[in-house]
Amino acid sequence: MSPIRSYREFWPYYVREHTRPLTRQMHFIGTAGALGLIVVAGILAQPWLLPCALASGYGFAWAAHLFVERNRPATFTYPVKSLFGDFHMFALMWAGRMDDEVRKHTSPPARI
Image (cartoon, rainbow, N blue to C red):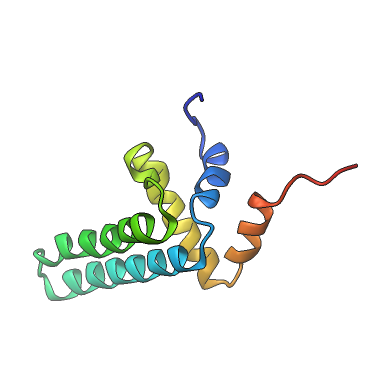
């Protein structure tokens, strides 16, 4: 398989790696925790909270891949695209649209 070069190509792959709702929920919790810790670190001028933000974001996500989805996190192959994908998924989950995105990218193509 050739490497994925653009985010547009990456997104369907990323979605297919997150098909189970619990995986997506764990990503959401980790991302929300990471963002919250970054904000608190800035407000309180406590830079030691930044590694905690990384641990929250990646810890929940990697645990979800290991124990729920049972696949290898995309972070290991596509670290930057994966980070963008996580925030993309977070925004779609916040908007209540991620389940539709999963159906879109996991359904067989329509026959004409």
